[in-house]
Image 1 (cartoon, rainbow, N blue to C red):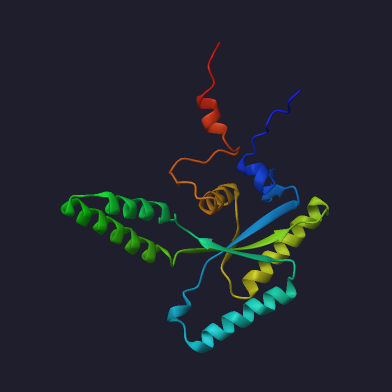
Image 2: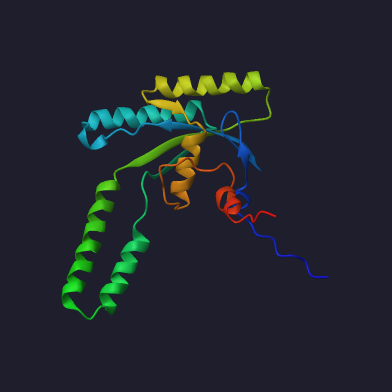
Length: 193
């Protein structure tokens, strides 16, 4: 008897079980995400940047269980640029080649402009404490981050879905993302009796 090949979705591959009241429940515990508004250090003086770095060091010393996540807050254009490069090489018409090249350069400009859009998060892994203890710990962490001069808010379910979709290269659309991997597309293919 042959074993049926199991299809692993993204949820299984990253160990995500479900959304929880505080964040994301994974096979390695519950993760809580704190969104941190980035500071444009290019407009700050050297002394101000030094103070920001010192505040971050103090925060990480006081809260050693916090992890830092940084990702681009936009889509990646690499596959589109590769496609345009391939089309340019294959295209015999010089005028069409020039248009394709302009499109590729335009994508480069957009990507450079968006590369400064970063999403920063602090991640805290909850222990097996009671709900009251977890609530107190999360409030304490949020207060400590704020006291060090960072603009922070706890990520909600839609925030978590959005940055996971960016991380995994999913095309962002205006509609709400489903809670379950493949939920919408699977429902589309159900054939009624």
